[in-house]
Image 1 (cartoon, rainbow, N blue to C red):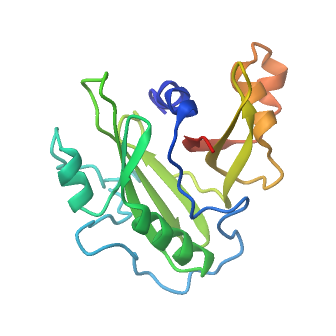
Image 2 (image 1 turned 135 degrees about the vertical axis):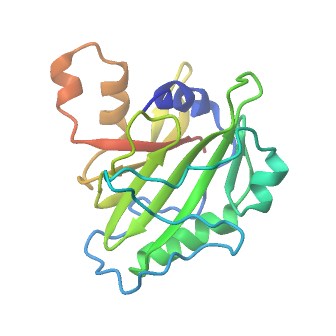
Length: 204
């Protein structure tokens, strides 16, 4: 995903966190007993694809949106290092996914030093799988994952408590393995990781 690691590394100093996640949030064996997207009424985020299988949820979006507008739309809103709105939307998403109910939300990330922001990630739980779409990505073909995990550990100099929320098919994946691969120049280390996608970084 275009720019996601750069933006993620900025969030390693993140002060706020989405406390609704557990170490292994979400289920991989849920049957998905509804096709309803559970979201605040104003959010309007649904998982729709075009004839080529590309996600269309970002079509027609305003080029610029204020923090207040993003919050009013029911999004999870991050400003620099702080979650400023949308904790309830996140909690609803986790609760729905844990219950096997299809759900979706939008994460809007604002950065004071990046004129291109906000950036958007649309996250879905659909029929037992998780999907994440990045509005800056070149392709928006859905990639299913079985688990939404919160991984915790220490990083930086000096070491500080940190963490990340990811999607993966391997619920044994650890924070240390992911961080080691991100900073490694070894192809073997990098390729040793199972496929995953980063939703966001956390700091305790």
